[in-house]
Image (cartoon, rainbow, N blue to C red):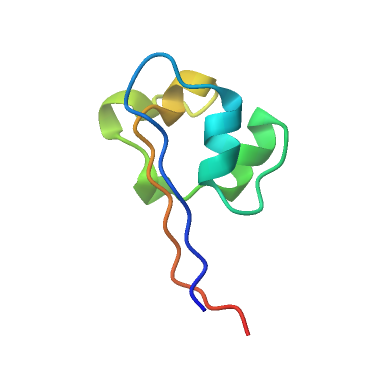
Length: 68
């Protein structure tokens, strides 16, 4: 089974919980979300320094590893 993620709304009103829901293995902190995020998933116009919640605007998480 492929492990995949979700995406964060491309709006200014998403929450940390939206980010956590989009990233498998992410837990309740912004730092943890950045640790498990794929750099390819960030929208370049919002990615910035990857140090704030707004950097996840429009983020789309996907992974290609498989769970056995």
